[in-house]
Length: 195
Ligand SMILES: CC(C)(COP(=O)(O)OP(=O)(O)OC[C@H]1O[C@@H](n2cnc3c(N)ncnc32)[C@H](O)[C@@H]1OP(=O)(O)O)[C@@H](O)C(=O)NCCC(=O)NCCS
Image (cartoon, rainbow, N blue to C red):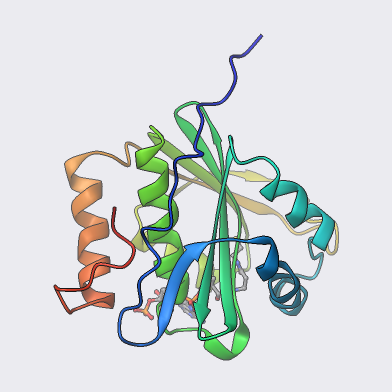
């Protein structure tokens, strides 16, 4: 039998500072969930339910969730499932009115930082074959295609591309993400998503 996943409960709110644009990346809370499901329904043809998100927050030993907030508004979210030294990005989305502001990248940075802190080495995900926007974002973070799951999505039987980012704690990968962070957050005094 497999051992229990390494605890990730120490993941803190240290990412919860703003970059000056007003957007902060913070640990997801129950109070965010209604807005999270509104975003989910706007972007996902087969949306996760509030109950599903709620259940995720009840598994803090293996799940890491972040929310992007601006003032009182929830603009996006991202989630990671950690199993030993491997992790799976389970969901990530940004409100359609706020795409292309770097919020998705910051949510990913936060997942990577928390994953490295929890001992993760390799990260995987599935993405719709037609989802070029997400695949471009993932490629920038070092993900590469590793296979196809045929007919993976129930709503339209679309194939999923399986992507992997390996050895995420290596110098090269840390530097890659530092360059993304520096581009998004050029003020060196502010390091909102770093740990
Ligand atoms: C994928 C998603 C989370 C990206 O969020 P975002 O906040 O717009 O992303 P960013 O602004 O950080 O963009 C990061 C990079 O992704 C790529 N990208 C994002 N949107 C793109 C688009 N519409 N077309 C092409 N490339 C795009 C670009 O390379 C971009 O970098 P650039 O702006 O410097 O060119 C967002 O499009 C979304 O919520 N989509 C619906 C849900 C979804 O598809 N989730 C992924 C499931 S696997």
